Image 1: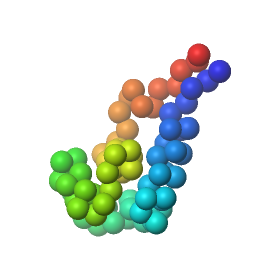
Image 2: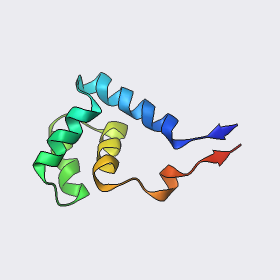
Image 3: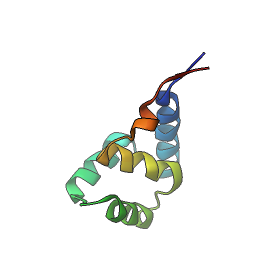
Length: 76
């Protein structure tokens, strides 16, 4: 069995959409327009806009890059 990070990402995207009513494309566009200089400022803005938990983590990684451990595919 292959464990792939994209399965988690798909769940995080669904959670974001369910909790906010907006999709990943919308959020990424708003974040790009905000020109956030670091993850802390982005997280603060997201929290003020009701985005927390995995949804927030997803958006931070989408903007600043996914860490290597998330992108790893494992075989179980």
